[in-house]
Image (cartoon, rainbow, N blue to C red):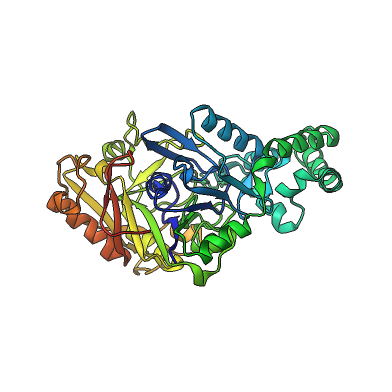
Length: 430
Ligand code: IMP
């Protein structure tokens, strides 16, 4: 009964898309369960380089069924654009199904996300500006528009009339912005729903049957555990639960049906947007990690922002493993460290006279912690061509083993380049 959740165990951008693409040939079903087009999953395979924001990364395998689950927030225009691009490049989307329960990112969500960020000034979160927070807020306030609503003229008009009246009051009176027209918005979203209609369905039977038949199912995460709205570095988080519990909730499978949780971790750490980052580094070492000009460049796939970089933070990674029940690790981008003479790992935090075992909950305190580093020798040998763990330089093997020991999970995969084949499978994860 292999239902596996593959989740980000840092602040996102760990290389989840790259791994889902690799594992898709084994999975019969891939379910994207949360987030929206704040995510950017880069996939490099024999068909080319693709940047996916909403379509599950299993789309490249013709035999795999791909589902966008109820927990996702969908910008229909972005999704249609992605489907169109995939089709134009010869990739079939016939087996892509969209949950009718998923919520829609409406134009006022995007406007409000950007206006709220501007009004936060110094305290801005650094959101992707894609309307994610306001869309999830409406979902919880029960004022959201769902994908199913786009297919029912009367429902859409009735719901939109009520919601838009309130949104327009906020837009015009609080933010001095232009109101949205009910008529235009209604017609536009009705049309978008119509364009997506062949993919929209009740996805529950698809997921349920696959689980019941013991087919390999992969729940594809977006963002990362440290951006979790409950457990992350609040308020510098996203608005959904990107971890294993979110995978169950957003896909509609029970926790007892989950067989394994694979935590994806870069061999170092990155973060986009604002918020505390104890092991952050600057200077020449940062340039090595940033890899500008290479396919591994640390530039946000969605927003084009330069990612902040730092050493591997084992305190955060261990915490991420604990709150998500991570049993297996996929360590990506090991090759990025190939040229370094020595590599640091943050193994603990110092806070005044104490060493907190877990990340402090408040930003004010977390910003004060000092990382305590352990230093390991680098290997200064290219690893991009290595395909077996035992062929990695001894120092690289020792580094990876130390990360697993610190995090407290077994090793599943190591990746040494962006290509589908640049992966070392240490133990089967699906
Ligand atoms: P939002 O999800 O657009 O509201 O952004 C909230 C925070 O999460 C910001 O710091 C974003 O940079 C971060 N974030 C959201 N999605 C991703 C992602 O896919 N990768 C990395 N960071 C992300």
